Length: 112
Length: 114
Image 1 (tube, rainbow over the protein chains, first blue to last red):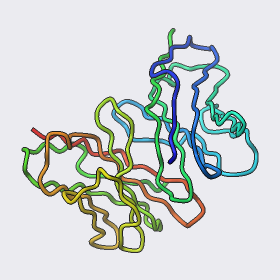
Image 2 (tube, each protein chain N blue to C red):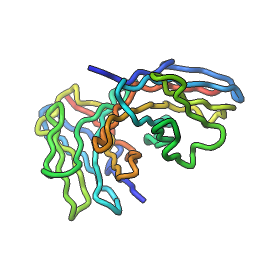
Image 3 (cartoon, each protein chain N blue to C red):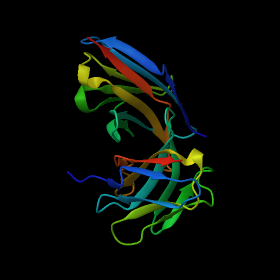
């Protein structure tokens, strides 16, 4: 069975600092991996996805993530945090069964 | 840009009542999903739907739940007799052709069961 573990339910970074949100997954088949963002009182927006090919994936709003098979990780990074990045971030995994399995989420706080 | 829409945005109901949550997926999409998020918890898969039938359902999706695509545009989730623990945000999602694996999510319906 697939699963996703997100380390840290809350992460705080200063504006302009590096953002690093950690995600580890478990999958019996080569996974498809996703990061979604949820702003307050809004739905889920896809930030980026990995299916095949290049392991470093670039997404919207300056975010990127690297698929590391040996570490079963898919950490999300952004070089310089902006106040507008404050939101809940969900790492997710999917296999050919198609349903998406979400992690518990990490709430990102940006400190002025 | 095409988007998934959901109505209502907020539904309040009494325990034991039936509710129908409505979704309009992106028009040329073929695969449809419902997920739910209990307050403060993670998003959970409920059911997937393709070619007018359920493809997969989770253990949460018991006999109280049903889905339907009554016409060419709507996709509905019905809860027959709501329980307090059904209070959650319900998200509809849709996906296009096989192999794309990107699901587009609607803004959600917040269901409150009193």
